[in-house]
Image: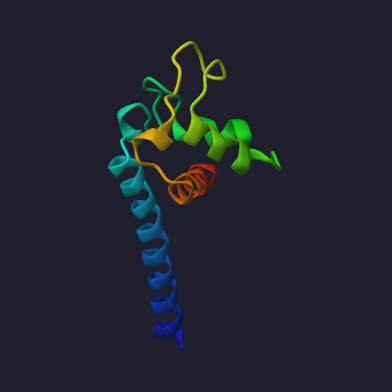
Length: 105
């Protein structure tokens, strides 16, 4: 029984880690990591800072998905974020990225 519990725990950790890496891989593939990092500010804010800023906001997913697709400026400083839909980011991609970002701690 103990070995089954250990195996299930290990399997769930592997699945969770794989999902997190897949979304970081998507961010890398779509060019997001050129301006953002998970924990360190680059040209844009770190994803952990974004998660912290929007934590608990009911409309955060919709607001950030729109910002990823259409771009924006002024929230994090003077450097604008370009519209990523013109660079091949789909709405499904944006939603997946935003969900991953908001889940970072």
